[in-house]
Image (cartoon, rainbow, N blue to C red; front, side, top):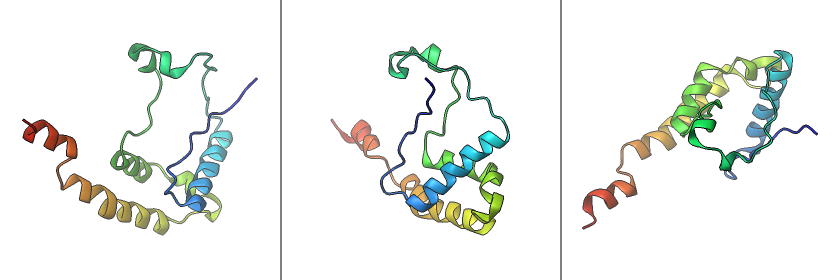
Length: 117
């Protein structure tokens, strides 16, 4: 049996943008014949760090995800589903309202490490 694993997006996401982008990414993979790799018969959470290092990784932060989107979004423009203006404004909005405010303030764990005696 074959399947594609779908990991749900954050519940605060805009479902119209999210599902449209996921559909466009899937269609891009089909159109360009991307190789999804061999099926994995193991539980990913049981693999060692060495084994998981062989797998491509998705961005680990919003900032990394926005940079990746900025670099590669041509597939989203196909068929007029998204426009360059929408993507550029979305990236700017998220950086200004989500990334920068967090980056400009200490993380709670930083307080724990430095101020907890």
